Amino acid sequence: MSIVTVQLGQCGNQIGFEVFDALFSDLHCSQGFCSKKENEAYQASCRERFFSEEENGVPIARAVLIDMEPKVINQTLSKAAQSGRWKYGQHSCFCQKQGSGNNWAYGYSVHGPRHQESIMNLIQKEVEKCDSLSGFFIIMSMAGGTGSGLGAFITQNLQDEFSNSLRMNQIIWPYGTGEVIVQNYNSILTLSHLYRSSDALLVHENDAVHKICAKLMNIKQISFSNINQVLAHQLGSVFQPTYSAESSSHYRRNPLGDLMENLVPHPEFKMLGIRNIPQMPENSLAYSAFTWAGLLKHLRQMLISNAKMEEGINWQVRPPLSGLPPLGRASVGMEPHFNTSIANLVILRGKEAHSADLEGFKEPALYTTWLKPVDAFSVWRTQRAFRRYEKSAALVSNSQFLVKPLDTIVGRAWNMFASKAYIHQYTKFGVEEEDFLDSFTLLEQIVASYCNL
Image (tube, rainbow, N blue to C red; front, side, top):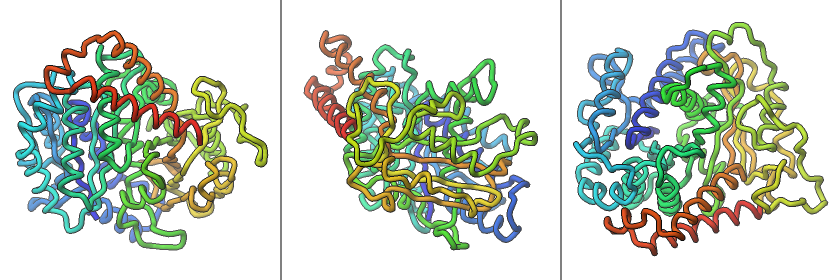
């Protein structure tokens, strides 16, 4: 089954390019650590998922590119074409001359309705090229105007027009220090609208990815391109093919559906995060050796202590003892805090993946009481290595990891709203104070629900 990627705004288009480039370079990676037959099945499964074939043999990304300014889309198209390895479709882009000026209301209430028909026609044409559609993967930022405002509008339209297809939104959480004065307004409006129209929100925090670039990748001058490459690596490690069952030799047919089934058991809880191990510069890989036991011990502690990378993990955090009431779980500000999960999925790729022991992730103390560990934990595996990593693991989790950042954004937005700062920029495009209040109510409910796990 195929996934149609919708790239929105500057952020979405730049990340989208890196994702397809990472998928393609993994496809043609010589060190697969698996049989030729296995590798060919893997390549065929990835192609069906993300690319459609072109007459001259250059694969075309199953993607629609949308921005309200032409510059980034033109750069993205030419970068893909220049690579000579894959490209975007000739008629898969929509751009205009005037951006959204970092105003969510302008993206949502002006650009959205004005260009709805053209954009939805483009998406429809892309869907028609798929033999079978798994769903939509929508890449966007939360803080700006086009990605966030238009992104929320398009996601709602996808819900209306393709109600049987899944929608997963990959959203970029803004830097805490801020790029845009109104980013907290844009963020709460984006999140509250997506919570109503998306099936799952896969969240990447800029601050966390920045730290990975600095500490694990040893990059001195960190650019958005560096950050986007780390994001693309993490997304590829989740979406590339894996076997459909423990003993199976068939690759999973419906990756989005399987992800949702494993990780989103209730519509109140749909925030997902990704952690990867190991992560390092490519030139260090040849000098590194890992065991599954070591990797998974670190990954489990990253989960329960809510660490985003293997460096600087707090090893003091322990699961609550079963039978005893958990202490201080429900408060937002407590440190160190045990990160309770609703559901976790571990994806193992590479040498001897089938022999790895995952008992540590099945402990009932890691999970909320209303799901049995057998329902809350899943594992996907393949012997095929990912991008020259002999062994690598990804963890996608639905847990309390976003309680603090979400509470912070809601608090900051509320402080501005209480003094009516910048509200006129939104009301003049039809977003009323009532819409803000609805957003605050919904997000405070989400914080409370995750706190009380």
